[in-house]
Length: 221
View 1 (spheres, helix red, strand yellow):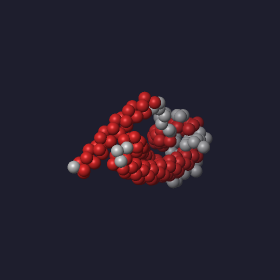
View 2 (cartoon, rainbow, N blue to C red):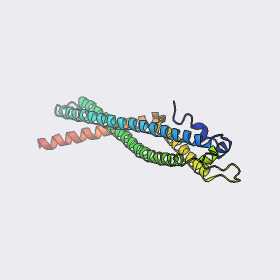
View 3 (cartoon, one colour):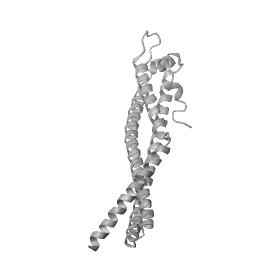
View 4 (cartoon, rainbow, N blue to C red):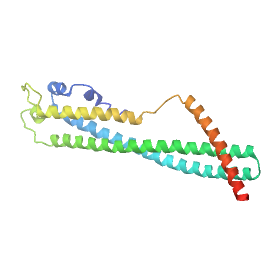
C-alpha cells in the first residue's frame, strides 16, 4: 500500500469544502491525524532503506579498494617482468575498481543527502501531527460535532480550524511529492557516457603504465 493511500482524497481535494460537507468534521480531523502518523511511519521506513544502502555502499567501496590495491601490485610485478600486456590488463582492472569506488561514493553522497532531507520532512510531519493532536484534545461542546472541530456552520468565511487544516493539507501534499521522489529510481541512457569513460580509462592505463616504468627505472638507476 502506497504512502497516503487513503489521504490522497484529502490531499487532492479542497479540504475546506470537505469539512463544510462533512457530518463530523472532528472525525475528519482525527482521520487526517491518523494519515499523518502513517506518513511518519513510511518516511522512517524509507530512511531505514537509505541507511542500509549507505552501509552497503561503504562495504562495497572497501572491497573495491582492496581489489584495486591487489591489481596495482600485479601491475608492478608485470612491469618488473617487462610484460606490458599483463601490466595493461592489471591496470585496466585497477581502474575499473577505481571507477566503481567513485560511483559508489556518488551513490553514498546521494543517500546521505536524501537522509538529511527525510529527517527534515519527518520533523515537519511530527509538527503537523502535534497540531492535529492538540486540536483533537480540545474540549468538545455537546451541541455540535462541527463546533467540536471549531467550525461554524453559518460562517461566510472559512473557520480558523479549516484554514489550519488546509495548511496541513498543503504540507502533506508537498511531503507526499518528495517521498515519492525519494523512492523513485533514476534511469538514463549511459551508452555514450560509458564509451567516453572507456576511452578515458584506456588513456589512464597508458599514463599509469608509463609512470610505473619510470618509477622502476628510477629505482634501478
